[in-house]
Amino acid sequence: MNNTANFRIAVVAAVAIFLGLPSKAAPNGLEGLRVVPPKPITSSLLVDHNGHTREFPAQDKRWKLVFFGYTRCPDVCPTTMFTVRQALNKLGDDAKKLDIAFVSIDGQRDKPDELRRFVSYYGEEVTGFTGDLKNIKSIEAQFGVTTRKFQGKTALAYTLQHSIFLYLIDPNNKLRVMYSGATLPSILSEDMRKYLVGNG
Image 1 (tube, helix red, strand yellow):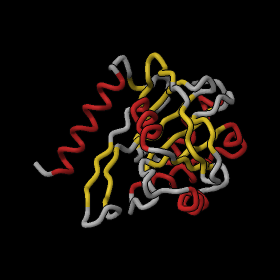
Image 2 (image 1 turned 180 degrees about the vertical axis):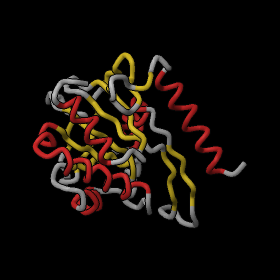
Image 3 (image 1 turned 45 degrees about the vertical axis):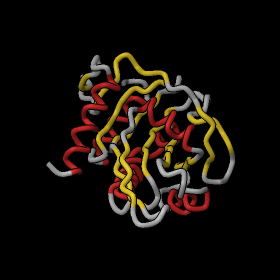
Image 4 (image 1 turned 90 degrees about the vertical axis):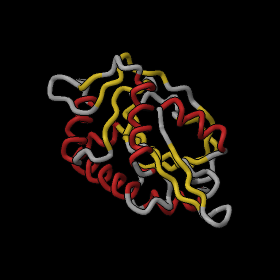
């Protein structure tokens, strides 16, 4: 069994442990994997793509869609963020009720300038976050994010593998739903619309 297969098995196991498995597929035409009961997320201090230190997630009574990745990711992160962009387009005015957060798992290399360039491709609704390793790992742990580092020939020459989920947080900063990064934009938008208008 190769390293990638082993990592995928580890991701599935980590998600199962994180969810504690009273989590289940969503009913009534909803998609994603519901977290039951919703999991409170404690805020940590991170740095946004403009260089400002702020709490994440903010205590602002807004819905948030969160993705963990890194700017040097060659394929999965840009593809998933493009899916988010397409879903926002389909949401129309309802997208104004939703904040999008891209949280870097690569605080060593992803500084605000790199994040600002990356998130600019996906719209002004997207805020990039980075920070010191301790705070990033604290947030990762709360969401059940799994990462793996493959070191190259120099200190900064490494690649990362990571779990690929989108996380929907409600206005009380409780994790409600997890979506596969492969979810179609049309399904993601229609599902989130139900939560945003109070039918989720």
